[in-house]
Length: 249
View 1 (spheres, helix red, strand yellow):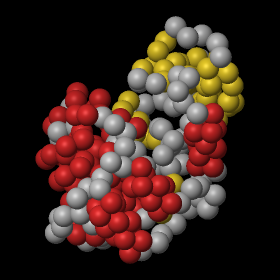
View 2 (cartoon, rainbow, N blue to C red):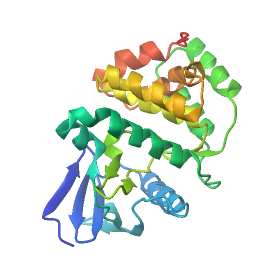
View 3 (cartoon, one colour):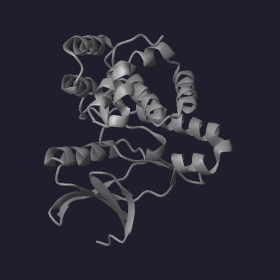
View 4 (cartoon, rainbow, N blue to C red):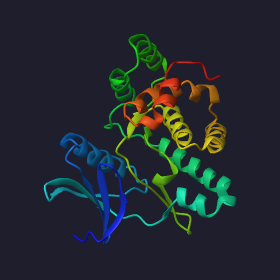
């Protein structure tokens, strides 16, 4: 394998281009089960026909677990907005259309979003009363089985000049309520300080999906709580505030 071209580097993983493939190498702190689950998620989503990387193999490289997958052409929407800010609305509309296309699919063998959220809420540093209120709110939300990306943000969507696109990073994929997926996307915009873009996104998502904004907003404390366990100190205050089950209507 040729590791001369690094595509991306995170605190716990490095991603390389190797010809027509991409190699994602994980640090030792990643558990084997999480890595295998990520590969399994991707393999299951492949079967929907959505334009995703395809799993080539799961292997070990220099003692570290790695997932080898096919390389997708395109430029991220994040980069395109940065280069062409006057086209932000156009790119955002495409972004929402792609998310709605994801939600049109079902992948019955994926983990359930509600189960994942319940586990994460239990792992937070929130007090017992707040955790109880979050668990109760989560249980009251309608049960759906739509494909949810779980980390749908502009850096995970590739666009090409011919109109084709690709969707990256399915490690957080679940089946569940599409409005929870939208609430997480809205939250991710906020965490990057892109408040105006967050509001534009939410308005567009609700308009195109014919969903009441208040319904998506009911998911915000739940997704904020689940996000808070990632332990990023710069996000903690905002996430804890949003997880306090205040009403957003």
